[in-house]
Amino acid sequence: MSEDYTNIHGVSIVIPAYNEEGAIKEGVQGVLDVMRDSGFEYELIVVDDGSTDGTPEILETMDGIILISVPENRGYGASLKTGIRRSRYDLIVITDADGTYPSERIPELINECRRYDMVVGARVGEHVHIPTIRKPAKWVLGKISSYLAGRQIPDLNSGLRVMRKDLVLRFEHLLPPGFSFTTTITLAALCSSSLVKYVPIDYHPRIGDSKIKATHALDFLILIIRTIVYFTPLKVFIPLGGAFFAVGFTKFIYDVYIGNFSETALLGFLGAVLIWGVGLLSDQISRVALRPGNFP
Image (cartoon, rainbow, N blue to C red):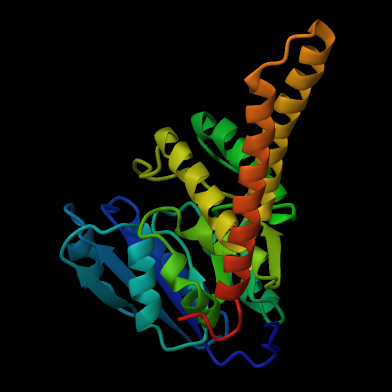
């Protein structure tokens, strides 16, 4: 992809909001102030995702935004997709409404996106406030994702990023309605050889309660594996088959040593062959599905 964005005609900023009355005004106004001084032509789209607190009333009093109100809560990813479909520019900026991401860095990320398909604000700066309970799961998921994607991923699910609209539309059918939107678009971009750059940013303490819970870690893991299987299935099936083969081979050596052959070794070998066979079939299906022209 890597189209030259030397001349940026404008950017569409999409902010999803759900029950953010304590932070929404300052968060949105901060983005407006930054963009007014940036020199970029822009539009700011705020998607109220069925908020039940004072968020809708606050947004209705704000100037300079395009407000999309959804009657019921559908999820973070669904809100982003709604805003992106409504956008009129080819460059999309997403950020959160809770004041955690440094809005003053948005123009820098836009400039970095001139020759990239996606630029991500990685939360690895000097001042990063991530709840301690989420750090172990975040580290494990990051390591698994980096291995499966074949590239170091400093921040798997950062909510501050700039990306090409056609990149989002290309993989829209894969993007879930929940919090896994950012994780999926990250893996989809990397696995499709899109140009992705990470820029270190700070991450401020959140105003209000986080919508992401520690129990979501399993959901993220399942989604990571599902996305990788879609793009590069052999990265999952080869190691899994190798584990079965190792168990079968170890048991076979032990059986030779004690002179008592069992079916465990045979099951291990058969399991490995079956898993590798399914992996090869999945790889062929993936190659056909990912051919140019097969995307919606």
